[in-house]
Image (cartoon, rainbow, N blue to C red; front, side, top):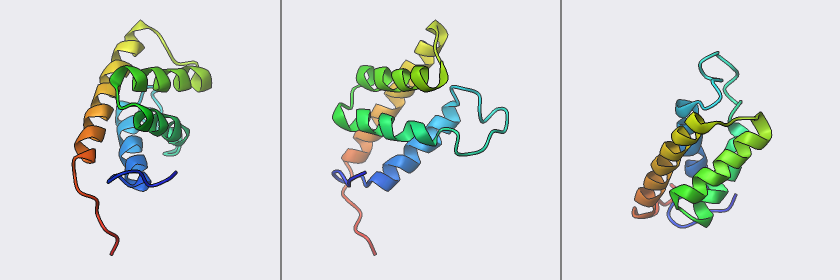
Length: 104
């Protein structure tokens, strides 16, 4: 990943992974699965967020990834996905308004 704007990719990845695990759309955290189970979802979601920080776009990209790789889906899941996407876009936009941190 490249550094983009004031939000370094490492920080974006960390924030996204934390939020994916908290949302736990597949129930991995609930069953005590290894902590890296959602790692593969970070890149496609981060890419969608950077391309268009719009909840519909982010939800579509995240949903497509989860359906393709895990068979995830359903009407109830779509509602939680939309809420998740709104949270990510709000976080991303709030972070983009902050000044960049300089490395020590």
